Length: 364
Ligand code: ASP
Image (cartoon, rainbow, N blue to C red):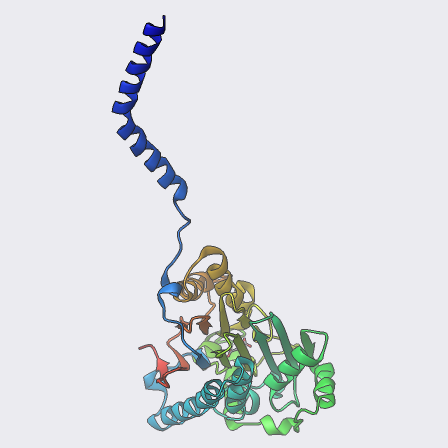
């Protein structure tokens, strides 16, 4: 009996010896299968982390070489460079991304060239109503103001709302009252009067009367939007973004666009990216454009470039009747930059930690 058992055991061991390599291979295959990781995009980790970086926009729209004079082009380039250098210097000296965003936007707000602050476009009544927002990616704090007529630099108000009020968005007279109490610069609404904005309003009204274009249609598409925005990464690893605008020519009924809407016009999160939008606000709100880029990175592992392309080139044109146009500028925690738009042009500029400057206006 014991002989029989030892014979059986020997046979079993022999068979096992033969099967061992096969078993090992099978084991390896199953363990590899269990080890398959969800697809992770490598783009972010492959990038050498920048110490700091900054990107700005001055609006997206029908900005084409053939509809802008050489002199105007130079003016735009100079102002974009002046603005971005302000933010660059703050970041280089170890300042915060919030300061860089705010001070850079101040330069653009003070210029009549862009649709923000001084150069804000006119409402149907010929007034100027500003919207702005700012967001701190380190703690998801945010502040915004909408429909103000007397605050010289609406981005300053947005920051004050974020830092000195328990709220996120303040609007109209209440926001102006708060701005005054905060000691921000208040101006006569006349300050915002520019020939350019007046002509744009006349154009849009004339075509509206002739019924050549429906409200906010062809004429709006043929005019440059000109909102301004900035995203920055500082040496402390914090991201911030901000946006400031006069909105859209001929707006009425207290219309508020995407610019003061956190998640649509502005978004920042150290985990993903900082984004500022520009374009036809009604579509950017419904598309939650800025947050959508962040969400694609956070939940789907897309790179900044992939997420920005997806939202601007695929999602935005699929919102509503498909007329949504505009663009974004964005920055991730590694200093990667995206400047995506589906319009003929977008005023934009970037500077990296090596001091390299890029300025663009048209589709390159
Ligand atoms: N997004 C802005 C708005 O709809 C306009 C712009 O970007 O120029 O108010």
